[in-house]
Length: 69
Image 1: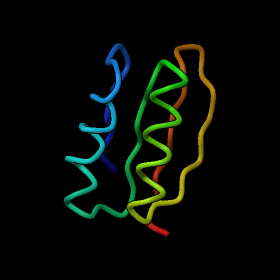
Image 2: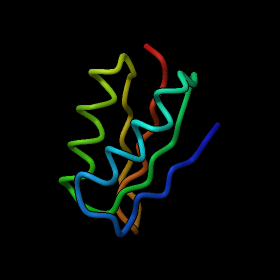
Image 3: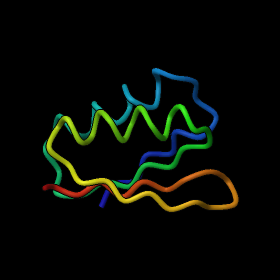
Image 4: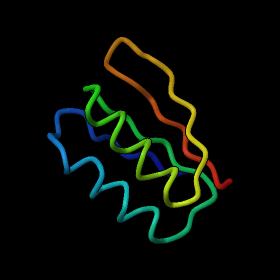
C-alpha cells in the first residue's frame, strides 16, 4: 500500500498528490494530512474517484485510508 504524506501542504496540493496516485488505480492508499480543509478535499476527491474513505485522527492530523469501493 502506498502512503502519501501531505502534511504541511496547502490546498490544492494534497488533492493533486492524491490524484497522481489514484490515476494509477491502486486498490488502497493511505494519505496523511494535517488540516481540516485537506482532509475534506482529499476525502471528497477520493469518493468521486470511486474510493471509500476511512479517516482517523492522529496527534499530527488525520490518516485517510482510501480503498476501492
